[in-house]
Length: 123
Image (cartoon, rainbow, N blue to C red; front, side):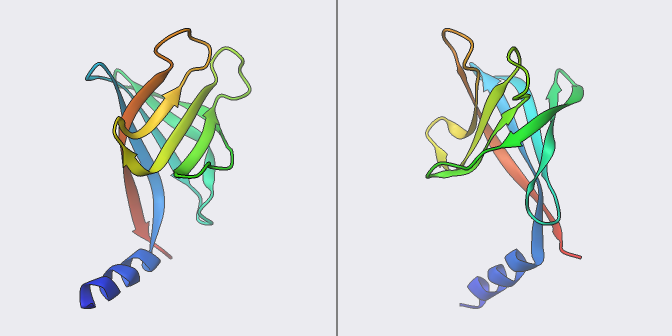
């Protein structure tokens, strides 16, 4: 009981600052996507994408998550050539915690990855 109470206090005191997902293709690291959060708990309007050690920012547009999803949004939604759907699940799926979906390619549309969240103390 004490442990449960302690976890509740820590969870209410901490604030999620970002979630970082590492994506792989056939077991080989492909990219890392980091989504940050504002003090009010809303996602920032950009993600940081790292590929082969180089990072850059792309816009992020959140949409209402479906059942079982923690976060759902679009990376570069304004670009018809570069938009990618990003879904982070509430519970780990058999293929991973998150997926990126490229709706423009004929096969291999989904890339799955694992995610970790970072927290900080609330001010």
